[in-house]
Image (cartoon, rainbow, N blue to C red; front, side):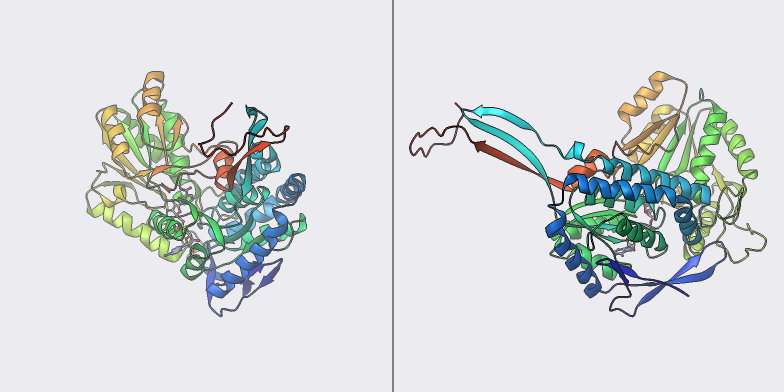
Length: 497
Ligand code: NAD
């Protein structure tokens, strides 16, 4: 059995805890690894190492930090296939999809290669006689990242390249379900010249997370995962005086208006609904078909999903892999049962889907519901599986109201050929990331990623300029170097002149 250990102060260690967790290949259902589960004392070791490293890393030249990121960028680029295959073996998504994930992470590393541009402050000369004012941005200290299973390479890369290039040191707690890509990242960062202790990985579950979010030497927490845990991390972290950004779950809607290009919309609904088996926080899970778009759209989606090639993610030509764990498969199946018994029309049923030779794999075929109503659990809950719900609406206004009433606000899309309808959507919709004839509106690394409402807790979106602001704090300096003007003692409040 492959052992997956923590990475603390530049080397792998099993830590002090004897607790471990199983890691499976979701396509076969076979356990392939055993991951160490950190105790609070292991977390303490990682934080101590990061704290010690911060004392020198914070003073390292900006160009040195950028150079490390540049070397790391070259390694990730050269080893992208190895990273993708590693994550496919634990997550289940196709290697092509995994390569896309690595590419989107790589773009954040590239952003960090030029971080100096965003760490610049402002300068105002002569704000008063002989007095100048300027701002500088300084790192926070030890920052922690807690990440979900569904993007084991990319989501940590949303965090640590920016945090580290800004002069912080980092402790990552990746998902215990697919922990191995973080091992590769740790090795590559060390090879790229990152000093020991600047980047650490602790594996584990609630015990490790609780130790991090209450640790007195952790200055800030970045979290990405489900909404209940995001809320818990935000509340506990802020109660302990930390800066917290906690991104949560989603229920993303895609409106299709009658004038839309239905082929384009059907392609988009299938790609965004079933890509990565629906295990994406930006997956479309509810299609809202307005007026007579409904029948045409359902026909288009049904025709496309019948042709989807579902199987093990490492096989050529496969378009959709299995779900991540047996427990998750059972949960998603349970939602399909519930949708049927609550009265939705089951157009395509993936429950009995079996892949020859992979009978123990966690597969569910693409599933499509029509006539879904807003009180059904397949509509209200984040399913996180290959289950697409179609809600029919008579009018565009009702569709917008439906989305705005939803507690989640991560991503959404409208498909239309009417510029006025699209503009209304971008202006009125209560969602953080909006697509117009684009189903998965994930911003590139020079923008920032973040939803609204229950899809985020905290004031900063992740990566991009907001990421730099999250991982630094501003200091303002007011200085007088001109010949001092002696005005004597003056207890009045300083004014300019
Ligand atoms: P999760 O919330 O179960 O786990 C996320 C992290 O929290 C993991 O590292 C896990 O070990 C830890 N954790 C789990 N339970 C905990 C507890 N009780 N106390 C403390 N820590 C705990 O999420 P997941 O199942 O790994 O990932 C899927 C979820 O993440 C979905 O809801 C998805 O929408 C969301 N997600 C959101 C975004 C976004 O950007 N908004 C991106 C990716 C995933």
